Length: 156
Image (cartoon, rainbow, N blue to C red; front, side, top):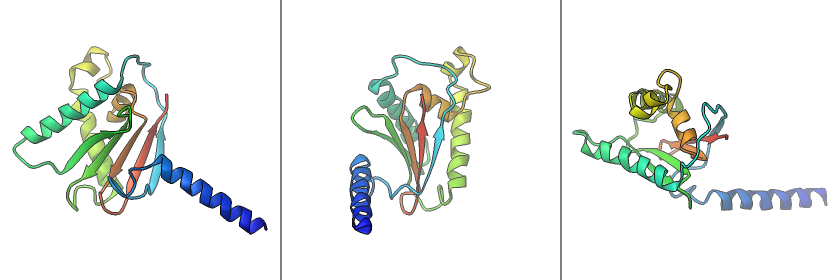
């Protein structure tokens, strides 16, 4: 009887998780690793869906205007566009989580050069994750698009 109850609980829990993450199997494979980014460098107000969608549009436009083809893409999902998904477009760019983290470091350099971090005097301390947290993304999903997905959850 105990095994039956445990099995039913596992099925219900698995169903709840699958319902919560409806993009698994469509935009990315199952989440294989996770972390929580809980540093808050500054409280923000007003960073809503429009700001997040515009951010993704700016990133995408910059990639499409570059002379080389993009090796990864960004897109926002969720009713409030509060999930940012970063997917590799070839087998080499995110062949490991370490290469994906290297890209996050490179994106940090790009955002530190931007006017917002300079205006807020954050150019020496803020990271790409800080920017996403300030923009009130709930999570970032990084995937090679084939075998693994890494979830970063942002605390507020």
